[in-house]
Length: 70
Image 1 (cartoon, one colour):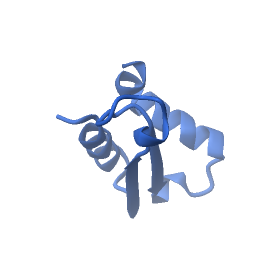
Image 2 (cartoon, one colour; image 1 turned 120 degrees about the vertical axis):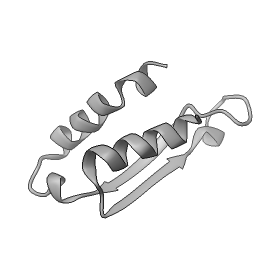
Image 3 (tube, rainbow, N blue to C red; image 1 turned 180 degrees about the vertical axis):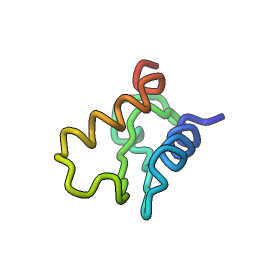
């Protein structure tokens, strides 16, 4: 399964977002064509309401620990 698809699936399952964008921005970096190494995430969900940005970031980083490690 592609990295982008794994990230999308994990985020949808964990947060049930109202809006989710997983954008592969690897082409903006010095990596081979077709790489999946740099992503921009836009996640809008009720569970983030009232949470500090850093807490939201940590929740996502924890969920995607395997993808971030590789």
